[in-house]
Length: 50
Image (cartoon, rainbow, N blue to C red; front, side, top):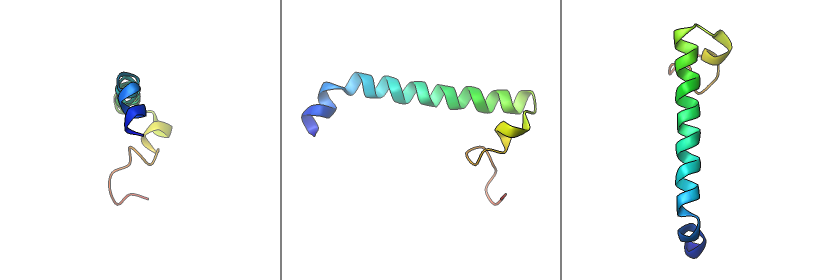
């Protein structure tokens, strides 16, 4: 398992960075243009809002 992680370390880091940037852009678009379906996703809801 460790050898596999070391072999694909760069690809794993780039994939995580891409996912992070995608979610950051999605949240930014939702906030700037008040796109309700984006803001209603569980990831972007404030704590305590169901």
